[in-house]
Image (tube, rainbow, N blue to C red; front, side):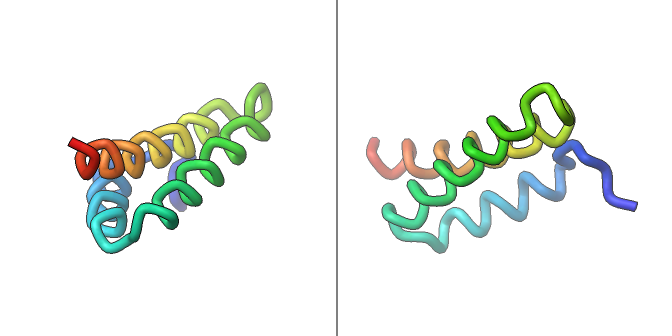
Length: 67
């Protein structure tokens, strides 16, 4: 069974996927993850954190492209 929290493998998968996306798609994924995290606030903190971690990982790729 898969844990609700993000694993090192999740971060690696997200970093690799983020590199393949254009700017528009990165922004869409970030927004979608943040909305999912908001919906889970107070319901499932581990899964909320999972989506926050995912959003941060994609945002980190977007930020690196801007610099």
